[in-house]
Image (cartoon, rainbow, N blue to C red; front, top):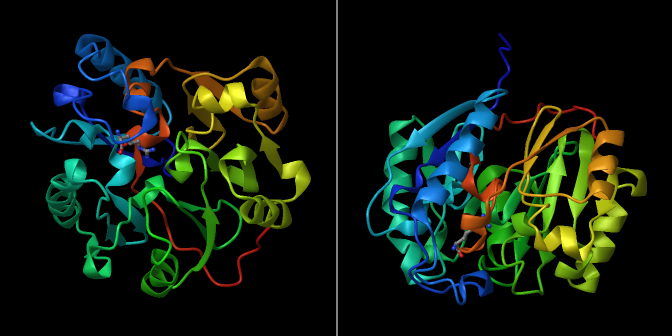
Length: 282
Ligand code: ARG
């Protein structure tokens, strides 16, 4: 047994539905979901992840249909978690459920001051090579979170501004992979952020995905070791990932895309060890 298996938190879609509109993907989809399909797709993702990682499930709760998107519960680092404070009132009731789950799990739960909007690992993604936290703002999380996260977690934070409402969380258009590789959709970012990403991630380690791949949520991928789980990727993107040494697993998550999420949003990585000082970067 691999002793270094990743641990992912998921929440079953027992009460999942599109019952309000807080992002463009939800438009036209209110009450158009099929819960049985959603359950099947979610289970397929969970079973696929269980082949290579450990999955923990938190109980689903009626009335908070988007709680399946556990990535938005908070941002974990070591034994600390910065609890999310959701921008939209429709998701704010999730905060207490996530807080209770994290505390019961033995994590130290930290809060953003004055409930500044912050949507957890939806907008804050750890680089997989450097000791760096990428932070997306412009839609959900407030730009003012960046220095606060740096202070709370004692980590360098690189803020990047998101400009396309369809890519309203950083994890919809940006995916750091093991080894320092990166999938991203440049048009989702303002020009300063595009330049910053290009400056910080070497060309041979980053892949600008096509518009089609981006709209298929290819950047919303779960990475565990050499495995990458995603809704759908073009042959060209699969070839690129394989060339980097990854094994791609495509799992249809169309029911969740009606709510604006896919593989990565449905998981929260629970093991994010702190890097030791002096560890090599790229
Ligand atoms: N309907 C949810 C929302 O708009 C989807 C969240 C997707 N999560 C993510 N990490 N991108 O908040």
